[in-house]
Image (cartoon, rainbow, N blue to C red; front, side, top):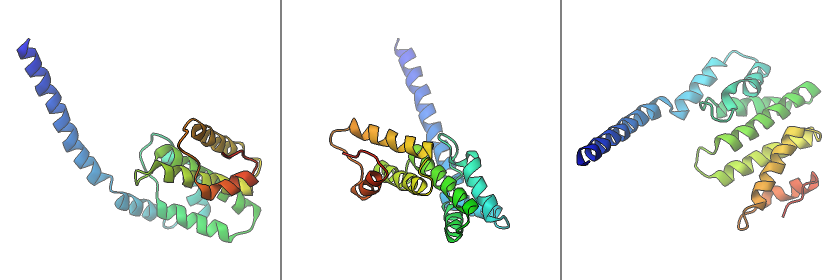
Amino acid sequence: MKLRFIITVMTLSGFVLAGCSNNKKASANNNPDSKDAAIVARFQNKTVKQKAEYLINSNNMDQNKNNDFSSTLYNDVVSHLKAKRDTASQNLLAKVYLRHGMYELYNGPVSGKMREAVTESLHDFIKVLKMDPGNKKARAEINQILDIYKTMPNKSVAKEVVPDLQKLGFQVQ
């Protein structure tokens, strides 16, 4: 019995140590700054539309996928599309905002502050609905967030987004 216990403890210790050393290696390979730079370099000679389509269509912003998101690429696309007033650019911008909101919501914050990620998502979904009031996905995501907040008696939606949510017809407590 003692031998089985010792073997179990040693085996678990080995797994823990192996996991720690692998996490250090993974951390070095997953440096957000180097990933960001690599993504930006890969899209250096691409059009704004190609960059936007990457952000919208690829798995880089899906839940439970490797974090292959580039803040620099996102900011570049948003600033270019905001400057354009044509319908196609504005539709593309709404899709980028929607995907970014979903990325923030489902991948969680880099900083470890979930409330900030949820608030950022709400800002993105609000932008989408201001551009496309009939967007069902943005509306569903907001409703889901509001429903979750209703289950937490001591928590509420960030005050900064409440007026915009109410203008869009959401009941915010």
